[in-house]
Length: 213
Figure 1 (spheres, rainbow, N blue to C red):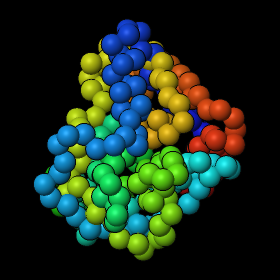
Figure 2 (figure 1 turned 180 degrees about the horizontal axis):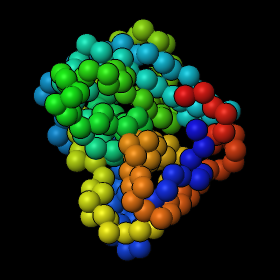
Figure 3 (figure 1 turned 90 degrees about the vertical axis):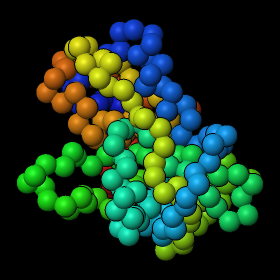
């Protein structure tokens, strides 16, 4: 998937709109905020592999097939999931890179039917931090995560009238933007979406052409 040329539809014409979309992007691996989850769930990792040539970013997928309520709590792009790792000094909140499930309809049946059972993340590996511990784990290893996602996500309704949109992200901050794009944001409603993705070099660029998702 190449994110340097996004699907139709984003041009944030007002500064407050830029702040709206950049807030989640700037905190994709931030230390836990003051209020931590009171309930945690245990889930296995489905995938852990480098996302860039220099292994500074990692793809991490979490198998949540046994946690239907947690899957259903993902309602908007830009939401986060808290991770708690063994011996780590603090939890971390990671932006979800996969899109939220589509709204349920009477034809869709029960919650979770036909919906993906994993959350995807793009994690920056910082030596000596919980994010590095996470990137050093293997598929099948168990981690503790919050029993529900946190944050309200991007309030895209605030820019519903914009025909053209600009989106900006750097490094691992592309994670919530990927969720936004793959959720079908503004599909067939906007005339132009332009994504500006800043990286130090191509060795540090995630989601390049030809990458297997």
